[in-house]
Image (cartoon, rainbow, N blue to C red; front, side, top):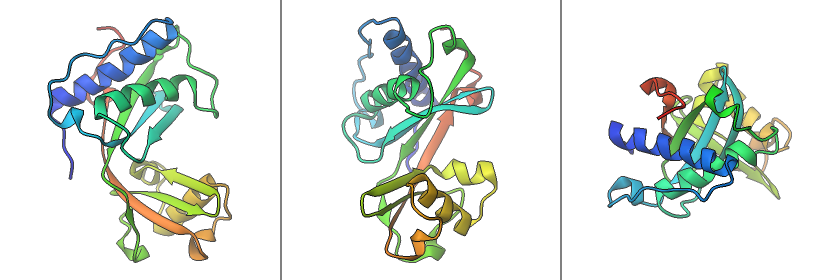
Length: 189
């Protein structure tokens, strides 16, 4: 499984928060120089933003589009101001939210439903033009079993809950998940 050092995790979280702050201040984002290593590799990543334990925004990219640290910055801004499920986060609100980053493994097709491990795997289900994705931690948060996780991923796609049984394409992935709360990071430097 993909792992980042604590230093890299802290840096990615700082990049995410600083990128959102720059966006809200209408300033050009500042990205530190990252000399190499895992943060410069192309990886799928999702940034989730929580306020008092409730989701406040989540946007990501399953397919690697560039260096992890740059993609994390872009996804953080998109989660803060571009998630259509929520009103954009305000500058005043920024101090009240916590960032969580999920670095994804490559997605793989599911050959056998029994191979899906709740808590380890996230799901991507598609059928025709509909597509839904849920991160591994979502099933744990809600206490879902495998079938419920599959059904809820279908619902997220706008499909019927049992469409995973009938002609849907199912992929899975794992994620290395970390957040500000585990490091007791505050909103100020």
